Each structure stands twice: as structure tokens, then as C-alpha cells.
Amino acid sequence: MTAEQQPLISHLIELRSRLLRIVSAVLIIFVCLVYFANDIYHWVSKPLLDVLPDSTSMIATGVAAPFLTPFKLTMVLSFFIAIPVVLHQIWGFTAPGLYKHEKRLIAPLLISSSLLFYAGIAFAYFVVFPLAFMFFTQVAPEGVTIATDISSYLDFVLKLFFAFGIAFEIPVAIILMVWAGITTTDKLVQKRPYVIVGVFVVGMLLTPPDVISQTLLALPMWFLFEVGVICSKFYRPREENEQENTIQAEGDSANSNERAD
Picture 1 (cartoon, rainbow, N blue to C red):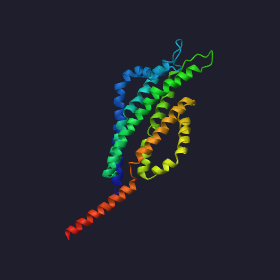
Picture 2: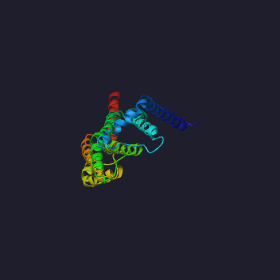
Picture 3: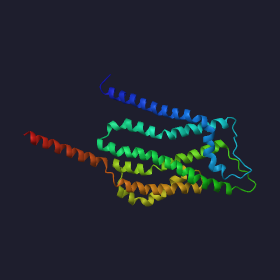
């Protein structure tokens, strides 16, 4: 085995161990929650149940749907809860390749990523769902009985959870792009009109085909873009930091040589 292959194998071994930790964390959380699978599904379906007419209810069209649907929801929820563990393992894998000052910058971003992801899910559940489901039930044609299938409902809400959770990561994405030197704060400000149009297009693509969900996703994305632009002003591009560290290291070396002489 060559010297170049040994670091590669060690990195692969570390990657495998960290992936196993992520899977283990998800499974442990799942085992703790699976007993409450039906209660969890009832809690997630509550925004729809609260606006359904008194004479209607949700239905299960599949034979195994009453069992598999809460089971699937619990598995996805376990992954959501394990997001801090996932990010911590990613941080542990990438940290050795970062400078000391970069570690101080990345750590707050990882924490804020978890909080923003949860904030996106909470916004979807407490703000978007009640408004969207009330609109859907009120515009149903006369003579149409609303009886939503539990599997279809789960697929619908999971799409929204993922869409809003990812969309709320915009400030972190902007800071990382500025830090990596991909763009600058001034360029982002200049492209604001295009961003406004883009967030509505993204809202149309990520959410179900209704105006309410699209608008309720696009407006927070626009707001978070502005937050990301403001926060990115406090982050310097990585190349500038590296050049500054190189100059500082050369200066320290020159000073030490002068003292030695």
C-alpha cells in the first residue's frame, strides 16, 4: 500500500464511522418514537382535521396504509430530530481541513442551520398549513365530499416540510458563498430584483400547485435573503483570510529571525 493510499483509506474509514453514528442516532430516536406513531400522525394531521366539515374525516385507501403511513412519518421525524447530530458529524469530518479562524466561523453556521431548518418546519406547520387547508376546504365544489387519504396527506405535508426547511437555510447559504468567494455582498444587492423573481419561481417549484403555499414560501425566502445579505457583511472571503494569515506568518518569521541575529 502506497503512502498516498493510506490517507484516503483513513478518510474513508472515518467517513464510514460517522455515517454509522448518524444512522445509529436516527434509529435510536425512531425506536423511542415508534410507539407513539399514531399520536404523532394525529398531531401532524391536526391542521387539516380542524378545518374539515363535521361530517367528513380522513380515510385510508391502502390496505397497509393505517400502519405504514404513521411508520413512515415517524422515520422522517426521527431524521429531522437527528439533524444536529448529522451536522455535528459533518463538522467533525471537515474540521481537520479548516484553519483555526475558519472553525470559529463554521461552528455558529452549523448551529444556525439546525435552528433555521426547525424554524422552517414550524412556520409551515403553524402558519402555512392552517391557511392553506382552510382555503382548500372552502373552495371545494358543491356536492364534493372532502375525504383526504392519509398517505396523500403525508406526502403533501412532507414536501412542504422539506421545502420550508431547506428554504430557511438561505442566510447560511449566502454567508457560505460570500465566505468561499463565489460572490460578494455588493453583487447580491445588485441582483436583488432577479432574486425576488427567483424566490417566487422556486416557491412555485417546491410547493404544491396552489398560490397560497407558493406565496407563503416566497415571502420568507425574500426576507431571509435580506437577512443573509446583512449577515454576510461580517464575513470575509476565505482567500483574504488566507493571504492575511500568510503575511502574518511571514512577518512573525522575519521578526524571529531578526531577534535571533
